[in-house]
Image (cartoon, rainbow, N blue to C red; front, side, top):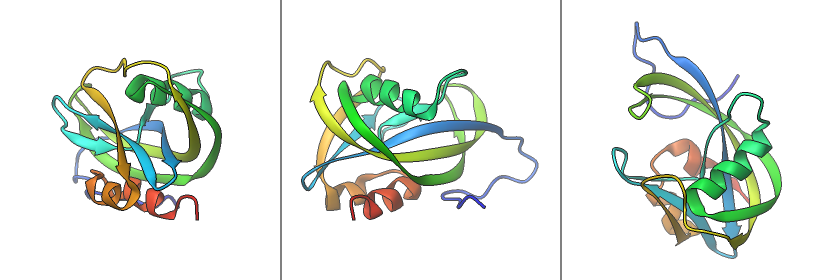
Length: 145
């Protein structure tokens, strides 16, 4: 059974399953987050959808780079959670299956290439309060322990 965070699924609403890979990126007492502006305006763990033919780890590397500009190394799977959400950029309701990894940030190679994303380093305790969804915060709280 995969633990659910966030809103209860809406009765009668059809949801499409969408797998994604997300990273807890620690450097000392700092964590690398992404601020997604535009229609979202929220802090998140960097990551996103796994494309067809892509492994979760391949998606993790790609998504972290797109959303933060950073390269990462040594990803280690922490676990998985699910949440139900409307995705306005795709105009669809999704059951998001969120595969969470801890990895090490290596270096910043570029600015984020994903529109409306900004890489933010925050103190771990501050980041816990900043994160939009409780699933992200739960995995950040348990990471590196």
